[in-house]
Image 1: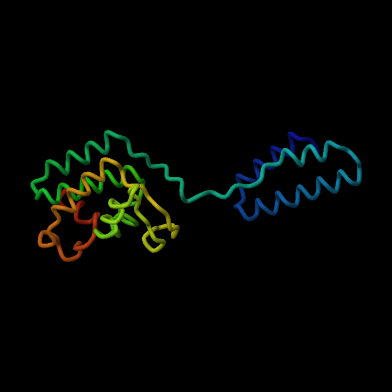
Image 2 (image 1 turned 90 degrees about the vertical axis):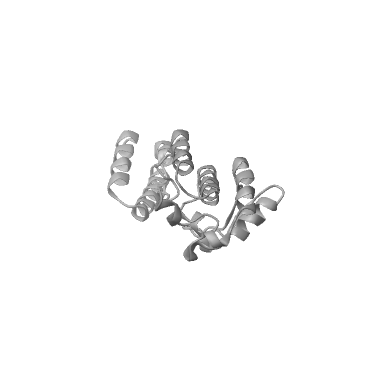
Length: 184
């Protein structure tokens, strides 16, 4: 058994087996190497034990999709150029800036935020929005700072909010993902 062979086998094992199996492999190989060290007294077995890499669980939180600044500008321009009310434009531009700055998911989190929650967030010093676990896809409650540019725009939107201009299903929601998709 050599370090090179051990690393090759470990890499093959990681490529072919899931996390739980990799954990068992890692634990068993470390125990075997420790046992071999105790039986032979050869320090090379302990050194091999140190080069083993523990398995890593893949995270759902890493999202390969990147939104670039030009994408955000294009979205804002598209909203601005729609033939809709100023309330619609303020609402959705503030929502776009909030989503771009915080990274919150449009359908899972942003679409569930209420006007009151957003109003409370802007009024805090410093501005912070509480996302309870039932409004987060990962079920992780956390605080989110609204974007500085979105706070001013958000305040304007809240000042000019007219519930009569909202559809019944979006009344009371700060940023409705579905109401933005249809006109754009």
